[in-house]
View (cartoon, rainbow, N blue to C red):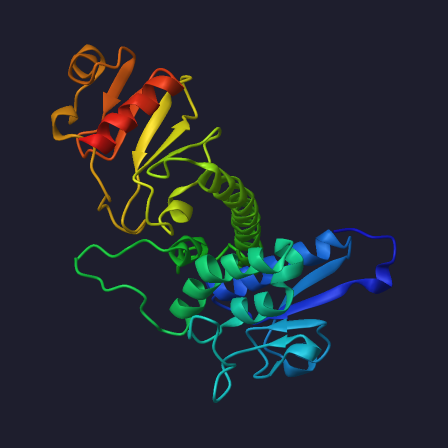
Amino acid sequence: METNNKQSKKKLITHNGSFHADDIFACATLSLMLEKNNQEFEVIRTRDPEIIKTGDYVFDVGGIHDEEKNLFDHHQIGGAGKGPNNIEYAAFGLVWKKFGKIVAGGKREAELIEKRLCAPIDAWDNGFDLVENKYEVTPYYIQNIFFAMEPTWRETEINIDDMFLKCVEIAKTVLTREIIQVQDMLEAENAVMAVYNNSVDKRIIILDKNYPFEYILFNFPEPLFAVYPRKTGGTWGVKAIRQDPKTFINRKNLPKLWAGLKDEELQNVTGVRNAVFCHRALFMAVAGSKEGAIKLAQIAVES
């Protein structure tokens, strides 16, 4: 964050007091962008309009949305528009809309981050429920992590601005990891597509690496199972392709007789000498070799 030119220090200004995920992630996005450019900056939390006017980047405060001037508030009458998912923008989404491509490394990467991270945070900040809570137990969202970081009524010695900056560091780590995830996922997408296109029997897709394939293969009608090297143990897996990756409904289950069997029991039933295990929910089986996993998949397809 340090540079030799002290006069070039940029001011990131947001509101003081309580903090939320949208201003935290907006700050994290701007921080990553400026750090990427070796640009020195400081974060100021205030509601003083005279100080706000001095900001190089103003977010979640000030009552103005003007992307060209780097003003990113959404609290004004009429809000600041909606994102591609028809969810109203909050500070995170507004900042990401302008700088996401730079921070994430590309247009497609930025779009994926917008959908999986920005939109849910913006929705919550604007009071828009994405899911129905059917139980007395409430989901624990990323916002709850930041709520836990706020000083309680007893913790009068804790500086809330310091806690905000700690939250920004958490958000930077999450955002950095999400960017890595989508970058590697897009690379995997190209690899899986190539395997699919070159497969003679597209019902069984045989992968050479443990790519995240679920959200790719369900887009095609033929795949029933994927065969892939597992991360540990030198074993190979067979996994059923789901009708929709968001559900637990498989296009085709593994044979019922395999449910919960392992080692010799599974080997006797399948005839595959290095069969290791079959999940009782019939969506995944394991073999000790690539050839064994392919054989299990072939049996399952024909069952």
